[in-house]
Structures are given as structure tokens and as C-alpha cells.
Image (cartoon, rainbow, N blue to C red):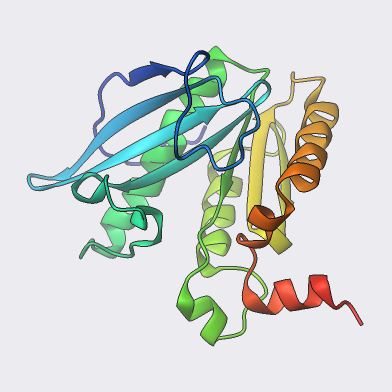
Length: 202
């Protein structure tokens, strides 16, 4: 990954979930374990970066530690972060992924960008956060070294090492299973405009 300024973070907290469940595993598709990194933005502002690991795919999430018990924690915007702090936070998430992907090159690392009220007010087909994520990820992870794939309709983006020969097969199987079992949840990742187009394409 390209060198970019990011915040300090320590070793992750590891949760093995093979014999338990996690209430935030809304996909219910065989969550195996998760890692939680604590990122210090300022003295009184910390963020938690979580990575949810399934069999062949992992999802990256982050939110303010202050609101870790808030059911809407992923929808919170800003926390009075400056533009440079927001950029550094995203760089930090990418730095964490770059280290994790070296340990597990067979895993596909993914994110689904949150849809905000503002996205629907502006009648956007994709969330503004998705556009930001895509720009940063394509900048930091070279196309020559990583597989890149996205589905704009559900604000989904993922990467994996080029050496992952099962990328297309594993990704296709996961997405097909998710759509079959959790179609109603997948709809939640769409903007209102895209959801209407998907349900009534005519």
C-alpha cells in the first residue's frame, strides 16, 4: 500500500465467535471471529475499527468509541473531526487492512458504505461515503497488486491480493448466498432512489 499519514493504533482485541454469536452479525452467514482495533484521534476522541471475518471474506467497520453501545453508531457523522482527521482515519483503516491482508492473502476485505439522509434528500444512486471510500482505496491499493470489485447499487467495495486465485469464485458465492438469504437486509444498503429502481426497473 502507498505510504500515507495515519493515526497510531495498537494490537487488536480478538473475539473467537465459532461457538457463539454476535448481535451485530446481521448477515448471519457464518461469522467466525472479529478483530477490534482502537484508534486514538485526539485525547478524548477514539474510534474503534472492527473487522468481521467470515469463511473467505471480511467486512471492515468503524465508529466512535464513545458511542459503541449506540445501535446507530455506524450512522454517526463527523464527531467534529477536521477534514484532515477524517482523511487520516480512513488512511488508518486502509493501513490496518494492508497489514491484515498480508497475513491472510486468501481473504477478501470489504466494506459497505453507510447511506445517510442527505444521500436520499439529494436523490443519489450511491452514498457519498461510498464515493469517498472508493477514491481512497483505489489510490492506496494499486490495481496491479490487488483485485478490486464494487457494486455501486449496494455501496459495496472489496479488494484482495492478486495472488488470491479464488477471488471471483469466493466473492460470487458469498454475494449469491447473501442475496438469497438476506435480500431484505441488502436493500438497506441502497439509497431510496436505487431501491426504487431495483424493485421497479420499468
